[in-house]
Image (cartoon, rainbow, N blue to C red):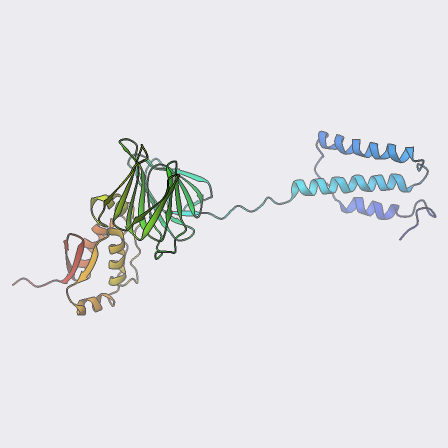
Length: 329
């Protein structure tokens, strides 16, 4: 290490190299430069008062300190911004001409989303849950496990068995916590009922100030504006779920077996699938499909896919019966 007391010029070459290696930097804003200069002047005055002004070390040390301060300041100003948070959802279907959102868009945490009076949207959350928004719905995607519902209705299909859920739908009247299920949460805009929860499969829990209200499959819970709770029953199929099937994303059929397709139809429509006999059930696991159901509801697709596979069907109540097509006598 050079001894500045023996050679007053020792170290100047190193200092010059240090200045040169810093390179050309953007101009310092006047207010920042003034603050740095003021700090350097205060240090200089303290050194002078201590009677050490004859040493060449002092101005060199002050210059080095100033360079270090400038370097740290501009390193902080020019460092790369933090990476963007991962998306919490991807758009799978849009039936709303008023929305700029389109299929394939990734939505960031905190993103608001609102559908028009005739619009519907289907999302796929980062955790794999299918979420659909009915017409006139406003939500905020707070995170991959929480949605804030401000108006309208959302439908959730977690794709998980009971006990595996983590999604929470928060409203001003309480939070609906998934327990692994398919369910609807709706904020009513008028009438005595303020909040309605329908469970198609599995169970949910409505958490509010009065405690927890469990809702099981086939149940409908109604929270009145006066705080009273009433319950009813709801079938897993029928008009109550028509908007949900209308908002179902299309299914890619290429390479899919007929049985897998019919399992999807059952999940979307709530109808139970039956086969004419065990032999036909076995064949359904072997038949391979092609094409897509895009542009059709699940029920509409049945009238195309089954005849295209050489099969017929009948719908009676909550059952879809798959049968062979018989030649007319």
